[in-house]
Image (tube, rainbow, N blue to C red; front, side, top):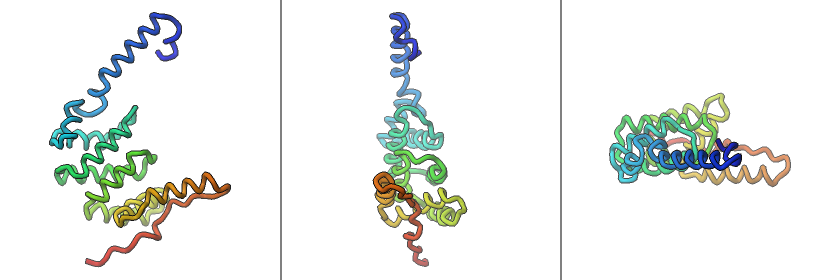
Length: 184
């Protein structure tokens, strides 16, 4: 339809109608339960919280989905969650370790830093010993974030160095900086 919009006035009109339909339906289709569920999440309502958990589990990718996921992680940091919802979000966080890193990744890190359970931290400690370098590195980032280390800043510095120093190969694995947990 985009290709045909400039061919004629009727094609342009059809494109404009399709755009109007899309924009009208976007709010209802982009979040489970639509605008009402999103408003419930913003207000801290149980229906909105569950919709946000489902939204993060489904990991949709569309225009503005990263911003919405970022906001959902932010809202859930202090929301009253059931233990089942907490575990589901921890499983989502673990799944993020295998996905491309986008803006919502760092919001997830902040959520986990605040809300992570001992089960999650134990799982991450095991992942740090993985043979998968990417998984090992990202699990280490979460453990470092728990220690209040500026992981995102370190990652940004490595990226910057690789842009400005010819031949520089960034090293994103900071696992040697993870402190051992004190014995309880």
